[in-house]
Image (cartoon, rainbow, N blue to C red; front, side, top):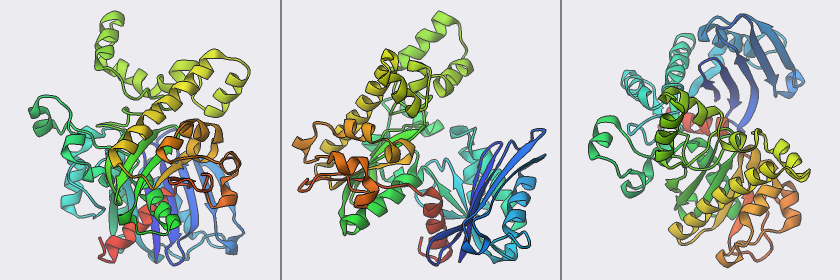
Amino acid sequence: MKILVINCGSSSLKYQLLEMDGEHALASGLVERIGESEGKVSHQNHSDATGGQFIVYEKPISDHRSAMNEAVGRLTAPGTGVIASHSEIAAVGHRVVHGGEYFQKPARVDQNVLKAIQQTIPLAPLHNPANLMGIKVAQELFPHAPQVAVFDTAFHQTIPAFAYHYALPWSYYEQMGVRRYGFHGTSHQYVAREAAARLGRPLSDVNLITAHLGSGASICAIEKGVSVDTSMGMTPLGGLIMGTRGGNLDPGVIMYIAEQKGMSLPEINAVLQKESGLKGICGMNDLRDIHAAADKGDARSRLALDMFVYRCRQYIGAYFFQLGRVDSLVFTAGIGENDPAIRESCCRGMASLGLTVDPLRNRNPEKYRGEITAAGSPVRAYVIPTNEELEIARQTADVVKGKS
């Protein structure tokens, strides 16, 4: 079974074609700057038969239909394509950012599903319209193939009511859906499955804390295989300090800024989304640059690192106590997978909680099947690269086969 995974943004389209027999990627690519005067297409074959060909070129990409045609053209190109025809694609899995309270699992797309995604647009106005557009274009191009929507929020729909409600007037929840939803669900679910496999136990038998640390970041508490809390809230602005997002914030700060600087809500939102977080503290949002500056004595870069780690430790510690028993702490995403200094700082002083990191393993986790804890540590810690495309493909296959 070949499954095409689509992640459609407002001006981009990311795709990956996977062969589910063996779960390996055949090809992947990215179409950028859709609707601009000059678009950009990047395509990578992963098949040995084509020699791992990598292609980059620029051309006008007028709309998402053109972008999808470009992707299919690369997948089926004579001599270099990885499939002979788009009819080989058995199903299409779509990343959809927000499923509101409608979806606890992936869903095969029909008119009711499309309507529900449409109704959640106010909760994700920048993402869900583009996700819908990708689904509709794919329905036209692949009329033979089932379309499956996989939601970032679905994994967190098991969070109990006392954890997802905000202490606001009840009508805000009833009328507008104001509550904690959480995001990065496919990533948290993927690494949770992988961690359970490495522990040699069923997912339903393990308690985990998963830390998706990248430019966007969230931490999740997983009890017996299901999400019971997560750091992000109603939007991806909440929780941890991120590259350009500040995370948790006293809401009174927003009103104070509005009064003092005369800024509108859209202007403040732009600051919260793009000018805050690590960038707001030290002017940089890439941790590699921040580490380098801190090593040279830059005080604000050191402060940014300390603040990032402090917020991570707050959530990790809270989830230790919430879960009661933790089998493993898992680091994933760009920072979690590649920054041993951040991992070590996040785990420092946690021996009393049963977690002791081995410095050698932490610097070279790939040599130890991802495990970074010392021998005898009751709580295991792993570095597990995330693979959201594979998780979407797995969930798509389950829906098509009637398993979900």
